[in-house]
Image 1: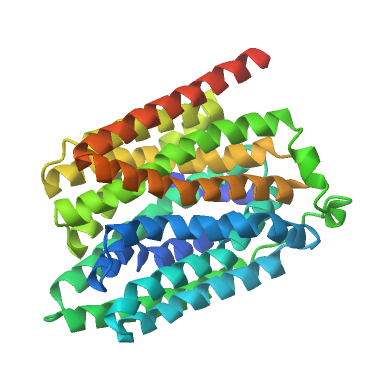
Image 2: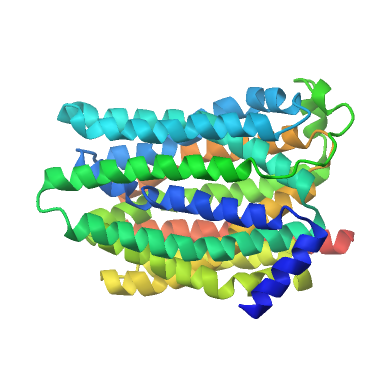
Amino acid sequence: MKRFRYSIKYLNRLNPNIMVFIIYGLLYDMMLNVYRPFAVKFLERVGGTEFHISMFYALPGLVAAAAALPGSILIARKTRKKNITTVFFLVSRAFILTLVLVPALPMPARPIVFLAIIGLMNLPEILAQISLQGFLGMVFDGQVRARAIALRNKFGNVIVLIVTLSTGLIISYFPRTEAERLICYQVFFVIAFLTGLAEVAVFRRFNETAPAVDGQNKIDMSFYKRVLRDKKFLRFLVAALIFQFFWQSGWPISAVYQVSYLKANEIWLAIFAVTSGVGSFATASSIARLIGKRGNAWTLALSATAIAVSFSLTALAGTLPVMAVFNILAGIATLGVNTTLLNGLIESSPDEGRIVYLAVYNMAVNFSAFLSPFVSSILMANFHIKTAILIVALMRVFSASILWHEFLCGKKAS
């Protein structure tokens, strides 16, 4: 704890937004994990099938991909990003509140309306994330940004553990009937919405002192041609996109395996999140030091390899407790990927027109997120689910090898 206080004081001397960023991140994680880890189980409880679960992962990506480019032009024309980011966040959090209405609908309409809300919610959310990524590139730089992201993720994982486990326990053991269980979900949707309002209030406390880049507000569609000629950015985009596609392809398969095959209820979903969070929390500082010592590209390639290994272990998990143990490695790998992808994205995009670079990246990744669940559905329809897991694991090994290749090429170029 003493070392943590020293680190915060040191980073605050470098940039006073550090503590705001960490507190904002904690509230964001709390808002998200009150309901998101249990969303697939809720979808199943309101009549969702394996097809609906695949669409749960696909539809938000389609909406986000369609909105990213035109939305980025609107964002880029704003010389100050904090106000417009706030508006997007508020609209996104309002969608969470509408999920309360789903259990009141007729049974055939419930899964469809739930998916529609989740999909539409990603419209303001992706614009908020693009604006936020550009905003972070303005208020943080270099090693300060990498350490700030790592600290935010580390202590966010503590919140994830507490919130997810508490929510899972309550939903699993307090309701006596299925109707009461759905009421619990409604209560947590409201809590997520209120926490989201607190999250936005803290975000408003960021000190937006960095000046806008000259000409940034004049960006239009022609600027995208310049982005597509930027070889450094394109190399990062292609390597990251291949990895993201195969990473995303495993999400529906993993969800179906846990919920439909291993019969995980809310408490087990919470335990999976907790064990994953333990791995992330225990290694967050080490990942930050690894980035500082070996570089962002090397750490990303290593984390991607760990993602592939952890997913292949899923096929060996014949019981829920074994699955929980394997999730520790998944948590370590996911933290490494999330930290290095964001840092690598900001590093590979220049200050001028960064919002457009971020939009191109997010459009590509979210279009990938739309397509990848269909790959999952095809695999689950034609192979035993454990075979499908192993196929995706091999795909992830392939994508990790591409990231290693990019790291070696970058090393030779430097």
